[in-house]
Image (cartoon, rainbow, N blue to C red; front, side):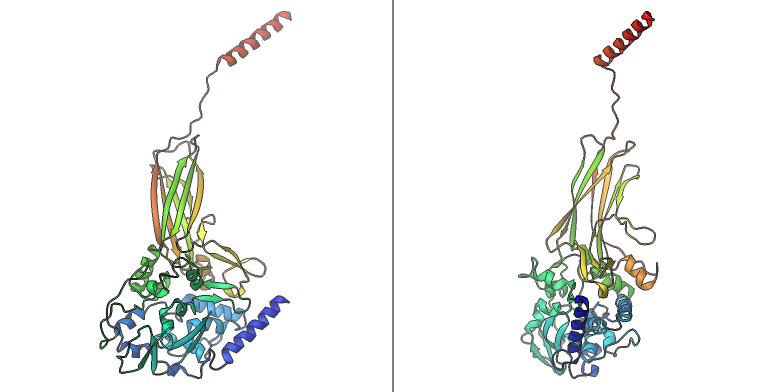
Length: 456
């Protein structure tokens, strides 16, 4: 009964989103928004930064496309608007919602989250809720931007705040309210909310915080200490690579490799020399949100551990990838596992009703992992331990589900690594020599045996 009621309320809520003029859906058409190529005539550098970014590819993203079509079919299109509002916001705002049976969008929405959408937003309430006012006035973070001869400008405080990003980077299930993506809240409840905004990290050249980018917003504009970049670099290195943007792929890898640190804080043998104890610490040193974040039922960070002797023989291993791309099931993994109505794990967010597990690492937080393994008696030389912290933008399980088994092998990014060596003496059982007590007992047994025999 509760589930049916939740679905009914969700449908009513979506209907309101799609029908109430002036609240979210505007009385406008896709042609009311400028094509990004028009913007590039004056903002060439910014256009080049945006072109190839995940924002520019939010509709072309093949993982999103496959998930959208699957969700549309399995929910009788009830998820169509929910997905569209952040991936093709202009078509959402103008009521042009695609479906699995009619997966077509306007020309401007083919270009994803483009310039004229972001710079016409004037209000948001989060979870994909925003008001956009297309027209001649463009909104942005500069208080004195009165230099354009093509359009009017106005200062928008919203564009300087993380709340602007949070309108699409906090996502709740439309029917049951389950938190699906929580990046904005992770930042807001984290260690950086008073010192660093989303824009400071994701719209400047810095990889772990603000770094000024001196320049001009357009040829006739004044020289400024900082012009925000529009690469919108996150952790998704897989899709820019698939979609032909090596620059964005490289930037994403650099961002991932600055996000975490891995340390070996204990590597010691037990007193009997039979067992090795290994303790690893993983710290979130560079991300203003949890790692991983976003689509965390698909994105995955895990520890790969290898212990080898001097000859290269593997003594212990964890977190390896097999020939089919699957990670050792016993590996330490950092991600979210959603559960469906039967408490079974699912990567289909439309079926998610609860969180079965979430062990991701918060900003400036850490996780301690312990391993223990036997030391073989034939160990040769010192023990060498290598630890790697790895990341994939999409799990092999999800890739196989969407594209077919083995069609895509998500590239692995090594976020951090550390090595250590320890001298080990193999355990050798001690052969005890007979002591005085043993000799005495043996002699007593022989005397007793002799007496018994003499009596007979």
